[in-house]
Image (cartoon, rainbow, N blue to C red; front, side):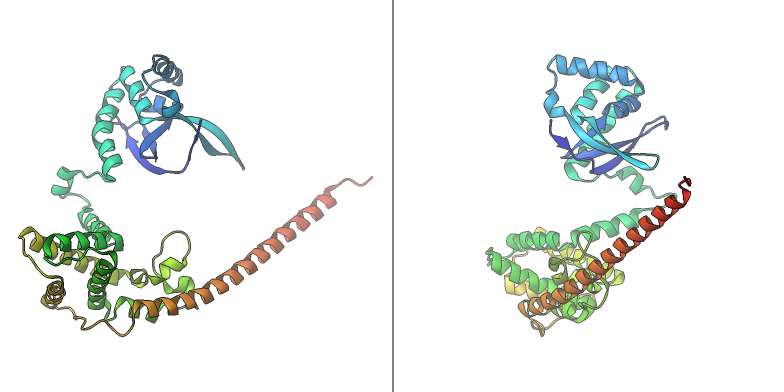
Length: 346
């Protein structure tokens, strides 16, 4: 059997009686649970789950090799971390057991899995529309809007949307990759300039500092700053600037979508003028021209700074590793001396 990674996205499912909360591991686009977790989910015994699974696989209802796999689990037992291989079961197997367990829990989970869970697995999100429409208690609606704006204004999403909108509404749209990227860069520069007073390239060169922690980046992908991160202008913005840029970007997309929906045919060059008009209406500074620095010049400068930053980081990590080794050796020597003193004299 192939391995299922123990790491994965988690969804917490709380039973309607409130007695149990089940941690559902999402791996490879589906949910996996161990035998004991299925038993807790349906308020039955592990032996009963084993019996049902045996019948399901024995009758050929499901393919065991596709719906049952081994997962490496790490459990803390006292001071030891114990690694064990544990069988986990696919959502199809979980639901098949649920149909055989005669309890309210089975019906409740099936309803939830075929609506809420399936929507999450397909779309990546689930919304409680009725609850969001009726504010009460602590209202998370503004947080939801901020998160949506951040997703919508992400570079890949923004590029895709701008390309699609202008393809639909521009009579002279040039879909070649280089032309599309150059046009997108022009729009992006105008939005970044409206918030910071600099183009993307100028902002990066002004803020990238190899002497500062993480090269002065405020956000990046993964656990550590890498070369690809240092040429993304949004990575250098503070929280207030990010909020402004996200809001301005989503407003611009709404503006462009409205024109496209009304079949307002516009030439590509006119879209630049429309962008300036949009920014001026929103009382923002409008970038004239291309700015003082090209993308290629920025990359050359910032990559050189990253090389210096990376060399300094490696030196610091080597020193830290050496200090940790020395500390470990000192602890071992101290433990050896302590044990020597405790040894009985002959």
